[in-house]
Length: 518
Image 1 (tube, rainbow, N blue to C red):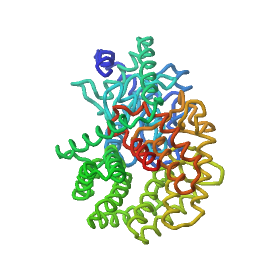
Image 2 (cartoon, rainbow, N blue to C red):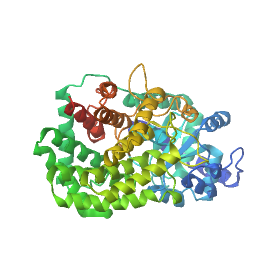
Image 3 (spheres, rainbow, N blue to C red):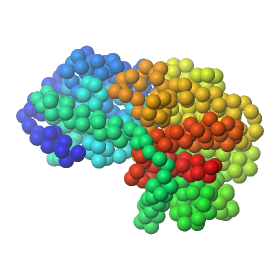
Image 4 (cartoon, helix red, strand yellow):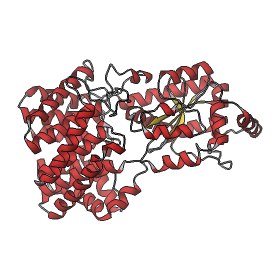
């Protein structure tokens, strides 16, 4: 795909670029105004001072692009993404580039953590277009939101290769104007491929197929460890969780050894490895995944090294998540961390960790939860009441962890309430599985269609996590409806994970949970 797109934008006309650059330097912003001051997150609000007329994600931006007959420049970044900070400072702080952007495209800026649904879908598009993974995302869209060109980090100016934004912007604008039919065909193709990859693949839960995919993950983990690659990432934490789950069911040490090798690397290298991976993975999510793995490793091996490392990590995470007043609170991320603290504390019988986790969960529930309503994604009075699948799933899991650790029935009540909300507002009653956003979420309407994510990304796959949470509810309550819903979810995506490797780890772990309870 990347090779197919490249010729369209690399035929640079030097005189055209120079003339356009000169015009951009003196142009007014026209119909565009920087709207980031209205944002709910500090990451977006800080961009209000940039010389780019950033628009909020949504229908208004798409309508403006259609009215102006321009492509959209979508930029997706985040606070804890190292290269996002570099690009904000060195690229989008340039006044000449800002004027060029405002004269050629409609710039739209998205906080990856505020809109993970948007980020995930365009990350897939960039992978198709350029074969690249990671953040930031820099994507050019048609006014209906379909991607036709993109990548991750782009420098400000690179006249030798033509890959600087000062070179690319005029070429993209010219191609959009002069080669519109080709652009639209390409965008439609990328859209179909992206939707096809995220669509469910219904099938039977065949033991041979599941075992083959688990072996692929085990092989990938072993190869990474032998090659001394960095495994301090969410993907490897989830892969280790899968291998530990398989070991817990089968007692086959062939799965335990590579999992412990990942944990040994992460414990021995400490924060240096986590910080090095911060280009893509939020450090607290890597640490939360590691904490879950360490607690499971302690149960599997009885090695005090893992127990001691887990206790230190639980204390640190509890301190980080407890400081909610000086940071933006995203329900899915906080609940994932809190669930790790509570499950880890219960496994290690660490009452201090349990107490800190319980206090953090109570605070989160006060801010994002109301009975019979979906959990809101961003805490705070000025934030939109957006509801995402991952929020519901992670809060259910955290509440079940709190119920396990404390025995308090109120947490089980919340988990059951949100499981009902999950079925009411997110379930696809026809094809199965759960949509990434509630049907009532108006902000999601800017996307062509709701997706049903199952593969791991910055967090465990939402549908896979939903199945694990429902299985856990079935064990706790004895109610078979939860197991039936989990089984239906797993069957819905049985054909979608083949060949996905590490990204299928949480789904495969959910299947192990299902098989264990048979």
